[in-house]
Each structure stands twice: as structure tokens, then as C-alpha cells.
Amino acid sequence: MKKTKVLAYHKILNRHSFLRQIQYLIRNNDFDCSNQNLFITVDDGDPSFYHNAFPILKKYNIPAILFVITDLINTQKPFWWDEIEYYLGKEEGNKKVWEVKGWENRKRESYLKNLRGKSSKPILKYEQLTTAQLKEMQNAGIIIANHSHTHPMFDQCTCEELENEIKNSTNFLKELGFTPDIFAYPNGNYSPVAESILQKYGIKQAYLFDHKINKGEENPLRISRLVVNDTTPLWKFKLILSGWHSRILPITKALGKLRK
Image (cartoon, rainbow, N blue to C red):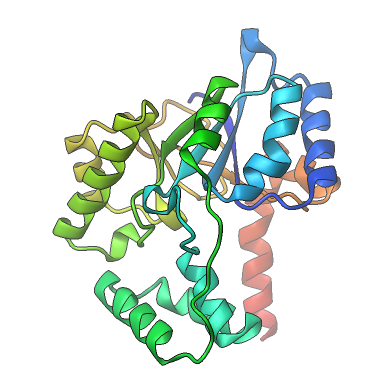
């Protein structure tokens, strides 16, 4: 991953904006096969990738890595963070999601169970990607890779929980002929203990969510990525790709704290 830029997306709802970003990358020769220095990755496996991004990537013959949560494939289970917003409301729920991400995994699981049980709202359902859709995308050049089994925060898990997450997701992907040995940390939450378990299960590449460009000979289990989304304005998209955004961001955050 020497001097390589890796973009990290999640949901892709704005097809037009995503198309503009891809067309800019094509004009900039970022996908030159003889000297490829940019890769597209997408976390979680939201169906919006299949409906909005995949047709564009297929049209322009651009590869990408889609990191999927294996427990959700072929189900109507929602993403757990969407559940919190559904039960608590958008604003309060969003704040709670960030709080919950800092909890021990058992506490997170218990909280979600209680939230579902106490709410008067119907159980939230969400049509997830199917095996057939994943196979279709794989046949068109999309790598279907590992994003854990249930998307816990890996720095908040016990060794036993980490073992179960990686074992289950790896077995699922392997059985279906996908790519279990390329992994993205859920929420980018790296830990040395998690890395040792990834090595135990034969993970060859692991991706962070740290908003940095890979500039040297990187640890293959700590590959940096640049955070973008489908609605990132083109001027900001260019700034992120230049690397300047990563340098400016800590300064603007520090200034923001001083003003408070």
C-alpha cells in the first residue's frame, strides 16, 4: 500500500454526486491500471451500494472492495445503529450511538435488547443484500470482503467475542466463495488484541478508518483510509485526496475547542 489512497464510503444514496466523484477520478487517471494509486472501499454492505454505486462502477469497469456484515446477509435485520435512531429519534439516537460505541460489547448488546423489548414501536426491518446480489457484484469485479459478523466495536470486545466474530464471518465468506482474508475494522476501532486474532484466522489485509494517506511501507493489518461520502462536495473531495484535509482537520478541531 505504498503511497496509496484508499477511499472509505458507507451508504451511497446520492447516485448523481457519486457519479461526479468517479468521473473526476477517471479524468485524474487515478484508475490507471499500470500505476493504480487509489482504491475504493465501502463498509457495512448497505443495499444502497448495489442499487446506486455498483451500476456506475460496473459501467466504468472500476474495481472496489465491499466489506459486509455477514450476520445481515439474506435477512431483514437492520444495522444496530439505525435501530437506536429508530427507537430514540434521529437527534437523540445519533448522540446515543456515539455513546454506545464506547461501551463494552456486552453492555451494548444488553442495551439493544432492552431497547427493542421496551419500545411500543414495531420491530424495525430492513432488506439487506442477498447472496445472489453479492455473487453478481463479485462476477463484475467487486471484492466481497470481511467486516465482522455483527459489527461490534473491536476495541470493546473480549477475546472470546473477537474469536466468534472472526470465525463466523470468515466461515460464511469462505463457504460462499468470497474473500474472508481482507478485513475492515468496524468503525475503524483497532486494537493490538484484535490484530493478533486477525492474524490467527489468516487475515492478510486489515483497513482502518483514520482519514490518512498511506505514504510508506505500511503494516498490511493497519492500512489507512480517507473518509468520504456520496455527498462530499467536489472541492472537498479534491482536498481530501490531496492529503491537506488530514493536516487541516486537527487544527480546525483544536480551534473549535478553544472557542467553546
